[in-house]
Image 1 (cartoon, helix red, strand yellow):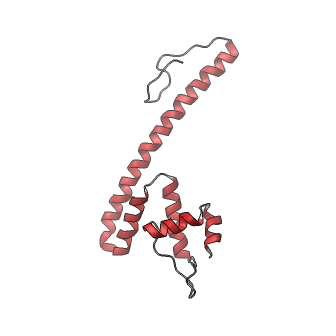
Image 2: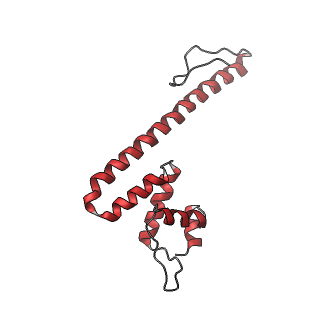
Image 3: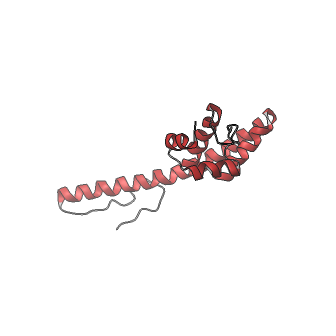
Amino acid sequence: MTIKDVCKQFGISADTLRYYERVGVIPEVHRTAGGIRDYTEEDLGWVETAACFRSAGMPVDLLAEYVRLFKEGDSTIPARCELLKEAKSRILAERKKYDDALKKMEYKIKVYERAVQTGKLVWDDGACGCSCETEKE
């Protein structure tokens, strides 16, 4: 598969793909006899993993470390598992921030919708339900 096809499939640029390969986020891609990148199913699996983890905010250096460990073989399975656990913890912390923001937003929408119906804007003290600071406008 050509780089153009891979870019289209995963919604990333050719520059990004080349960068991922250069910094080790994906292993070196197979090439034709003429030196042109020719993505195999295995290569596509790496691209898919990289695109997925990057979209979730996993840092490039963690991804590159994961690939480096993978290349070293099965003796690194425990280290890879720990690396993924660390990345998962980071993603869950980020998700909590979004969940809190959504709770606050839902609370404010509810208050505004009630104000539209009643003609009176009343904030319920501490009713947001998120761990961020509840505030009145």
